[in-house]
Length: 411
Ligand SMILES: Cc1ncc(COP(=O)(O)O)c(C=O)c1O
Image (tube, rainbow, N blue to C red; front, side):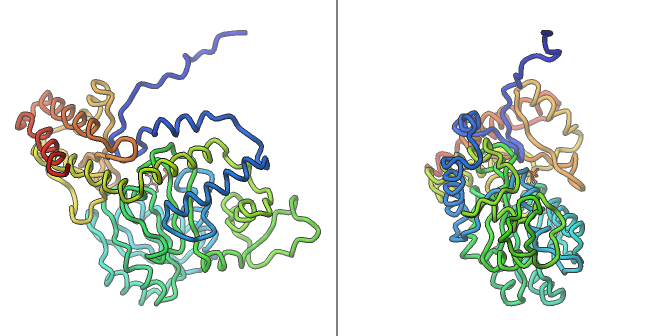
């Protein structure tokens, strides 16, 4: 036997205060190391049912079809879009950041005729803007991001569901970055399909995508139901409708697997299922409202601290997500050098952004396990020290003082 050419796994103890992923809750890491069981073991199928029930509460829905798609958050997006879109279907995508473009790209790959509307990065849409586009395009699906991590903006959704019903469109929402840190009322807001990931305010690793589907959405996707040849029993009905273009993301087949029929599709990612279960338990034990208030409190402390430091916030703060904020990198400062110094000197990670904002803003997240006073104060202190060393003259201690003030005011 020879020694491995690599050392044992031992990543540095980073504090992840960027836009996600963030450090997982310790309980979630414990869940991740739980022993595997077989995919049809009654304990396993029971866990699958429990996860469905837990995520109904997290999504604030009674949707029976609340389940997991294995893969990162974009697996959830892709499963929803590829299962609902037939080539030539009209899809409307209001874009206010990078992840709107992702929805456009995935819908186009699925063969949709995609129509987009855009607002400048840092803004969100009014219901009137969305209604005008719905009226003009008459799409089968409106695909919308709730919290676009690239800009930190939170699209108000409360009025959009009713508009979609009026114009007979299905409403799909990517709430990966916003869930559990901001209100998300799937039933009250009449959202037909929502997908998320664990790696933001749910406090887990990426690798599984919780989704929830309304009955009317399920009724539509089930019009295209084809069971794989190798698992089709003699009693199986012949396939109906056009075949969904992806096998892995074929939601009607995935629903069969999550139904009592337990018709085999993929091998469920057991460790990620354990994680998803633990994340939901933590969020629900804290209480959804209390958790959102915690994200608001620590997000605001971070915001106040950075403003007091003299940095300028990006975007329309009235529509910012609770859990992430962006700030312009000051003139004359090398944003990447500062991020690198924070990483190497403080084991602290913050983010930059994408596209037009790449290298122009830093993004600071206060999410899940990391939405805490100590992490906020540490980030502010470390950034101030690093900027000072880079030659910026700053009001000494003002950032930490402002954050403390917010904590005192909101006790
Ligand atoms: C709003 C949003 N949607 C989708 C994604 C894609 O997630 P993943 O990288 O897990 O596929 C992200 C990731 O940051 C996101 O913030």
